[in-house]
Image (cartoon, rainbow, N blue to C red; front, side, top):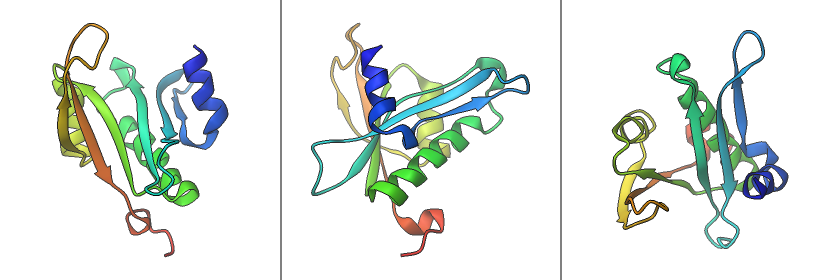
Length: 133
């Protein structure tokens, strides 16, 4: 829990929730800026989730786009990274095909259960969000 609170306290402008019509949380993105990257600022998506009954409505894309926009606008991020389980084909398709992330490498035994992760990255710039240069 401390890990998530650290994100929210350190980078509150990068994490978002999607609400249903009754105010219930139906999705969220938790993101941060990498702290050791002063010469090459970049963000990282720590977690993205949308309830099954709310999927395929574009919520994940909207949450990710908003977080990435603020990474660029506020922090000057050059790119954003994330990790996804090799077995999570639906997430891999979302990140690669819809959100235009690229697989950069495979990190062996990244997860506590020993599963490998795809390390993914997407280059960012101000023009993609219609921000003034």
